[in-house]
Length: 253
Image 1 (cartoon, rainbow, N blue to C red):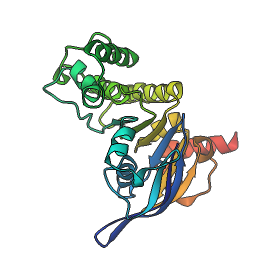
Image 2: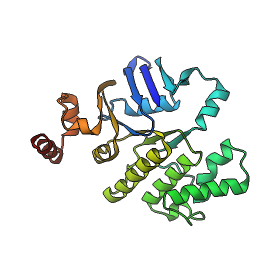
Image 3: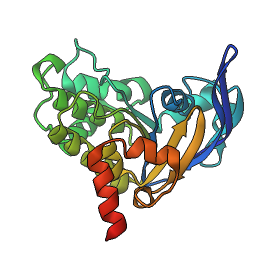
Image 4: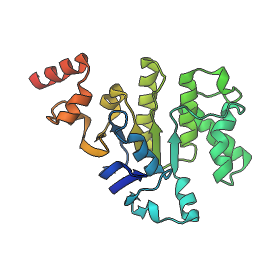
């Protein structure tokens, strides 16, 4: 579990986040949504420690993330996986080397132990046997799966995904969504996803936090979305005619 407690964040005189309090549950896919400029990316960067809050605290279970020293922070980061929006793969490294990179940085595992763990993760994302390929030799969807393999290679307790379906076609997006959800449930990970993809939200969003103008405008489950009367949520979720029809059908069922 990760908890944000009365988080404020300012850049100069501009206040971007205003009194954010929410809980991201363990073993679930927790989704952050909102319009561009709502503060989603800033919140995600605060949660992983790339930014420091102006005020407030972030808790990883019973650990105050903002009070850790360098050694404690390094230890905790070994339990954190990150899937970047642009994959962030090293073009000059093979698939195997990309996935192995966190093991080289953070562990003292033997070469065989590292290879076994890499192969396990590649098999988990259905990329067994692709070890020697380079990112330029595989599709965007495969690159995203390599990114997922790298993000789970340290067996993380916490997984952050920044726009995981960015640039992917709808069919591949569904595959990536299911993969993230399955890995979350099977390994009891606290997964936090920053996304604009409402298909993802409705498919795998166990808990949802809507940001608007730097504040939490609504939070709940995907089952509560269609029944909510929150005007900010309705304006964001039901902007498309298709979803408007879906909501009407659900309410009339």
